[in-house]
Structure formats: structure tokens, C-alpha cells
Image (cartoon, rainbow, N blue to C red; front, side):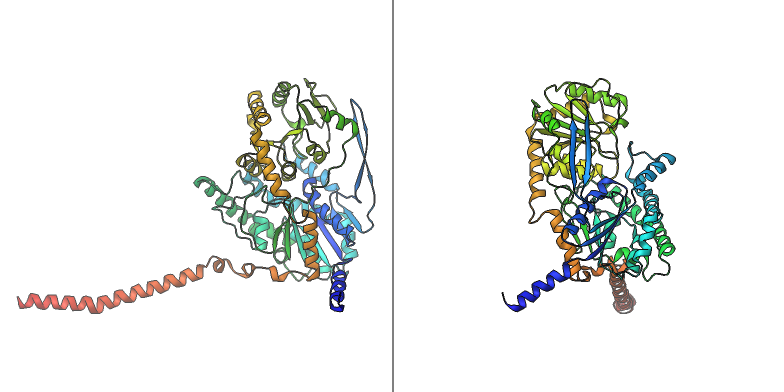
Length: 541
């Protein structure tokens, strides 16, 4: 190895070792936190120093101990601290969010329309932003970091742009955005990603990339409505927070949002549709998927002994199994009785036993989901199809019975059905007949499994793991002290130039002038001559 190569390697190591990174992950939702914390922990393992504002503080890799018997499963978490991963605890946000939901009669246990979600978006971002700034831990961090140099900021890109005021007080470091959802208007606009409602479905709609006229019409409406809410509600709210907590800053909240070096998306096209992206937007795949941990011994035994496979029934972290009305629970109970040789794991969040529970059903408040889905006898996943659950089912090749309720779950259910990897059941349509028919189809038709295995091979076919890919991109931004060379010029164009309105007006003006001149010439010369000859001819007669 020559001296220049050695110097290059040393410079590479120097620029990427022990960077000081601030993580801002404000949303109190475990499904949002998991992918981002997976990345921050991976960066800490590589030697970087992480300070992370998170609703799910955790000091390291969890070790599972269990005490399992016929009736009870107790799980205890032992944590090993990571010295270079410091958590700024805002976990109180979970209780505050539950309090606000109860006070304002907001329920995630019922169907919520895409229009209502978009219309209420500014309420959510306002509330979650105020939670972060209202935390004494965050207030203390702001005082501590003021004037301290940070090398990079990791930021959940859901338009909490006032929180990027940390950039102003920490030496103007580059920002890498993270997204645990498929991209939509809030994340696309700041990156300059084109949004074509003709074939790019809004990720809150049950649409594919091949839409009917009415689907395209509603897709266009929701895109325009989202833009309106962003311009007239989200941006002013975030600007107010920025000025309130960071004072007379250099950048506006909008400028901070629109000047991220990179956006990393914890998803891929196995669970979405192809679409155009700028080079400053990178799909890396589901970062939260890890090597499954061993199951508790007795749970492993119970699953191993299933004569005709296993069904896993969980409606995620927001929708509770206990929220399902009694008559709909009864529909599942009666349907499960029809498959006595198939065992069922049912996530049930109550201490009381489920009335009428069949012998083949096991109830627990919590299950290690990835380890369950990785079990070779798992045959079907009944899910609300939040993004992480959909990605895990895809990764492990498990067909899905989708029961979507809100946000991107309809989008995922459409993808599942269109891919032939599962079926959809509307919550309002839950009856014994509908549940039984779908269970029978999914458990007896091998095409669903084959199609999900095809999606699984797509999501697994990557040169590096999603987390390693994300780490590489973060270190890429560190090495180049930002990534302005990836920033598309479209972000600096006014809307009329982006849509080439000025060009069209110019062309139309030229055409109008040409037509006018031709008409003038025709009127003044050719038509005059014709009329003159006509009258002369008449006169001669």
C-alpha cells in the first residue's frame, strides 16, 4: 500500500470517526421510533457520539428473560448501557397524547378518513412539537448545546421544522431526515420530489399506481388539500415555535425544512409502487427488522406442537384487541373454532379472559412479533397493516388478512391485495361468514404464500442491510460536510417556473402576436387587393 493510499484511508477514518450527532425523534409512537433508534444505535456501535431526543429511551440492546407456564408469560427487560448513546427522555408524550385523545374524543379505534387525517395534521404536529419544547429535559439540552459544535442532525421528517432550530445553536451542521413511512406530500415537497397524482398514489389512500378516473380525481384533491394545510397552517405554526424558542435566528422554519442534505426512507418498493425520486432521497429498506430473538421456551414449544400451523392476530400498538366490539370478537372466535388444528396467538390487552375463547387460542398482552413471524409454522397474520407490521410480514413471507383503520393502512392493504399476498376485510364488514371465508381462502390457497414470498425476496435482495445502508449514507453526508451536490435546483424555482407557466405564456404570446400580424397583413394587403379587384370587376361590368 503506497503512502497516498494510507493517507486517504486515514482521512476517511478521521472524517467518519466519533462524530457528534443529535437525533430529534419527537413522535410518541413505537412504530415511528423503532427504525430511527435502530439507526442511532447502529451509529453508536460504530463509535459516533449520539444525543437523541426520543419518546422511547433505551440504553442499548435488550436481553430477554422469561417465566412462562400454562397461564402466564412474564417478560423482563435487562438493558446494557451504551456510553455513547445518550437519550433525552420525552416518553411522557405517550400519556399526554392519550390524555388529549380522551379530552378531544379522538379515537384510533375507529375508521378515520384520509381527509380528516390531513385536515387535523397541523393539530398533531402542533401538539407533538409543544410536547418536545415543553420538556424540562429538552430545555436543559438547549442550554447545554447552545454554542456547542454538532457534526450532524438526524431528524424525523414529519414537518417539525421548528425543532431544527438546534441547527442554529450548534454550528449549522448538515441535517439528514428520517422517515418511517412511505413518502407523501409533507416529505416530498422539501426534497423536490415530483408528485404526479396521475400515477403516484397519496399514501393515505387505498389506491395503486394504476388508478381509475375517480381515484385520480380524489388523489389530486388530497394532494392539493395537503399543500393548502401545509402552506397556511403547518408553516406558520412551526415558524412561531422557532422564533419563540430560538429567538432571532438566521433561517426560517421553511428554509430549515427545505435544506436537509438527505432524506432516508425506512421502506422499499416491495411494500409500495415505483415512482420518481430526487438523488437526495434514498430508500434503504425496513431498518427496524433485526435477527429474531429466541422465543420463551414454553411459547416455542406451544408453537412447535401446532398440528396445522399458527395464525397470529394483532392489531398493532394503536388499535387494541379489546376495542373490537363484542359481536365482532365473537365472529373471530367462531371462525377460529372451525380450524381446531390451527393454533392462534391473539394479542389481547386485558387482564380478564376472553369469553368463549376456544382451546386453540392463546391470549397475551404482548408478543415478540418478529420472533413470532419468523417461526416456520406461522401461516397467517391478521393485522391492521401499519407500515412496520406490513414490512415484517413481507420480510418473513407471511400472508396477511388486512383490517385497515386509518392513515397509510388502506394503502398497504391495497398493495397486499393487488400483489396477491393476502386479503382485505373492512372493520365494518366483520362477521363470522366474512372472517371464515377469508381464513379458509388464505389457509388453503398456496398462491397467497407464494406471492408473499416473492415480495419477501424483493425486500431481502439488497447489497447491504437497511441499517448498514443508512449508516453509509449518514457517514457520506459527514464525509462531505453536507450533500448540497444532491440538492435539486427545483427547490429554488418559484412555482410558475417549475410548471413552466412563464414559458407557456411566452409561447402563447408569440403565437398570438404572429396570428395578429398575419391577420393584420391579410386584412391590409391581400384582402384589400381582393376587394379592390372585386369592385373593379363589378365596375367594368
